[in-house]
Amino acid sequence: MPIGELAAFGNAVLGAATLSLFTYVSDRIGVFTQNLLRLLAGTVILGIIHYLYTGQIFESYENQRQLYYLIISGIVGYSIGDIFLFRSNVMLGPRLGTLVFMSYVPMATIMAVPALNEKLGFQAFFGMVITLIGITMVVMAQKGSLSKFQPKNLPLGILFGLIGAFCNAFGLVLSKLGMIGNSATVMNASFVRLVAATATIWLTGFMLGRNKHVLKSVYDIKLLGIIIIGSFIGPYLSVWFALIAMRHTYTGIATTIMALTPVIIIPMAQITHKERITPQIILGTITAIAGAALLFI
Image (cartoon, rainbow, N blue to C red; front, side, top):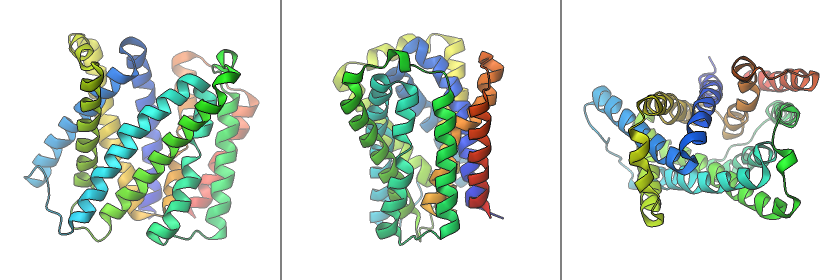
């Protein structure tokens, strides 16, 4: 059974659900405050579940270097990467921002060659290309903010997007390095990354004076409930699935399948927002699924 590929697909599905929930939250309290609460709630939830499962908060690491890899991957992949990706989406709009972010797939694949000694065969490489073409077709067919796009923002927006994509790719490769030959569980690796990311983003919020807005959001019971549910799905389950995928399959294959989130979110958007599904979206979806199927074979 292709455990890694199935976990990557699970990550894409959960990512689509998380995106829908936190888009609602971000519209009401802002992206930065949403990130503060999302990561904190995810850390608390995962910490409790990990303690109930293992009887301890942190597991021991025989090789301290692997622990450092996980800590750095959390800081770079979550905190720094998210900041740049958010700025890119603001400057480019969600469609162009998503396309730039997709560059993390080839970035991670290339990084994995010297760092992890991973080399993809022709079928896997072909499947990656087909999948990314399909995702691109879907993203460009969706309604977005191209009408609000300002050409003057293009260079800096692309730069920020590429930095964010690089941070995401670098963080994933580091996370895999932190799990190689390590007796600690994937759940603990995910918890270490979340703790590092949460501490970093809350420290950043404190330095920027943004943490004071958090308490106002906590008093909204409905909003708080959505954040808790979204944090269970996202920072807990989705990230856990991502690390399972990284541990059990090639980096390039895992990241390509995880990038299917824009395709998977289509039926959700059709149900919740009554968005029209165009022939281009259908063709792009079929193309992406066909490419992903090659990665499972």
